[in-house]
Length: 245
Image 1 (cartoon, rainbow, N blue to C red):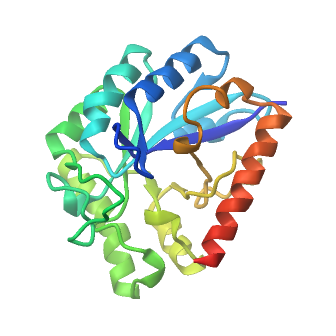
Image 2 (image 1 turned 60 degrees about the horizontal axis):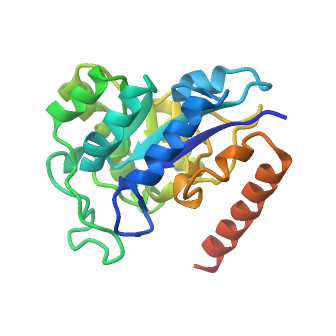
């Protein structure tokens, strides 16, 4: 059996935080993919791949400094594409979205527009991650439009092209949010821990958080029933935690 899925990262650092994968683990994963027969493509290309092809796309949420410092050299060395989702009002600032940050999350600088442009030149796609990283399900109608369409406007103004990809902050969405996002972007990514399916809606694309992959043991089982079973188990646990919270 084959599997198509998106691996998503946030920060590449050694703090052990809930958003962190070590640079060494990331390098090992990319080098393993380079040796494998899994095709590494962009998100739109992944959605277009035949169901019987093993494929992966790579994304980074938040556009943190480590994407340029740690991830880009490794990906460029293998000519692998990736997408970075930027919180546009925090460009050049940091990832303390609500001002005071989160004690579990390391404070990191968000890349500047020229740095994002440089990533584009090196094979990255820049997508939108809203303007301020709110939970969109708690936004008013006007706030929702500003966060979604406004972030696309910011990227178009600063990088010269309107983005086609979006990622929901915290993976939070409801039908009203998804409708607004679908009217603005071609593809929107969630944090639902699942591989792609033939009937995956383009505004609700699932992704596999690479934090759970650690090294390469799970990657080596790509496309097997044992891995899809493990993914299903993890998906169920995450769903239960979300309900409990």
